Structures are given as C-alpha cells and as structure tokens.
Amino acid sequence: MRLRKVKGAAETIAAHPNIVVQNEKELKGNWQSVFEKEQPLYIEVGMGKGQFVIGMAQKNPHLNFIGIEKFDSVMVRALEKVIEAGELPNLKLLKIDADELTEIFEENEVAGVYLNFSDPWPKPRHAKRRLTHENFLKLYQTIMKEDGAIRFKTDNRLLFEYSLASLSQYGMILQDVALDLHKREDLEWNVMTEYEQKFSAKGQPIYRLEAVFAQ
Ligand code: SAM
Image (tube, rainbow, N blue to C red; front, side, top):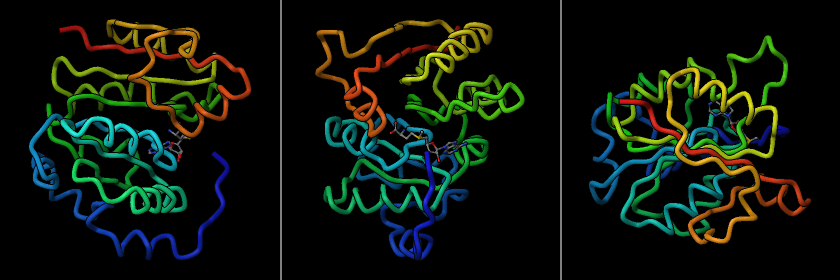
C-alpha cells in the first residue's frame, strides 16, 4: 500500500480510545471486556482502510471483530470510516504490528484470523515479512482456539502459491481453496475489501483459502 503521511493522524487516533484501543497490553486475556457482548472474537491482520472489517461487523452482530493495522496514516482512514458508519458495539481497531500478536492476545482468545491482500514482499530475502510465513502461523496458532481458521484472500498468484505451500508445510489442513472466488455463485457471505474491489473491477481473479491447524 502506498503510504502518504497524514498530518495529525496520531493525535486523531489518540482522541478516539473508544474505537482504537489504546491500553492493549492490559487487555491480554480480557478482550471481551471491550465489547458490549461476549461473543466469538475475529481479527483481521493488515486491515488497511477498514472496509472489510467494518462490513463484517455490520453483517455479523453476533460476532466481535478487531481490525489490526500497523501504520497511523492508514489507521486514521479506518477510524474515519468507523465514525462515518456509526460506532459499532462489536468492532474495535488496534494499532500494532502483527509480530506482537502473542503479547496482546492470550492463548485461545481468538476464534479466527482474516488476512486480506497482505503485502506480497516478493523478494526471497523478505519472505519472513509475509503474513503467511511460518513465524506468523505460529503466532496465529497460539492465540487461536483449536478449531480456529485462517481465511486469506489475495490477487497475487505468487503470494497465494507461497501461502498454500507455507500452510501445508506447517501441517495446516486446507478446507477450501478458490482460484477465482468471484466466479462462485454462493457469494452472499463475501465482504469485499478495498483491494478486492479494485482488482476484481479490473477482471483479475481473486484467490482465497481457508485453513485450520491439524489437531
Ligand atoms: N486488507 C486491506 C485490503 O484488502 O484492502 C489492505 C491491504 S494492504 C495491501 C495491506 C495492509 O496490511 C497495509 O495497510 C499494511 O500497512 C498492513 N500490514 C502489513 N504488514 C503488517 C503487519 N506486520 N502488521 C500489521 N499490519 C500490517
């Protein structure tokens, strides 16, 4: 994602602790307390400007969601969207890097992880930064319940192929793989991300997988 620095982003974020959680380290093991209702908690790692996680929270009031993003300049755009949508009781935003996940969430605290159009990091020497690298899979496995699933969408074929191999080699079970998601007929459950909208409008196929850790 091309990043343009947004003036005053950090201040705007700090002014909305009701939406962008600020005391995340104190909440480890107690995330349900930030929501109106105790219900399964799903996270999107690398949410960008938030369209997906907002859409999911609106569509699924029986689930809780946290949108995670590491950059202020992107987070502030997501924050603006949440304010515009009307603050949702089942959605919070969190500004952390994915490599901190196990410092923030307790074991088994999360019901599922969404990864959408994650940065591809095409150079082999940057492979460890890909959010489907085994180092990140370990983190997701730690914080997720045993039956929790990773759901991943991308337009990037090389990242998708890498991810299929990475998850399989880690011992994950692929439950669903789509090589052209939008050709499916049963798509009423699908919430589009900003990137998904952009790439599918250009006619590019969207790849998707769903996988669980072997028990
Ligand atoms: N998910 C959105 C979508 O599909 O429209 C945004 C996709 S954008 C290509 C990837 C986003 O992930 C960027 O906003 C980036 O800052 C964020 N990101 C990348 N690595 C991250 C990390 N390690 N922790 C948190 N966010 C990350």
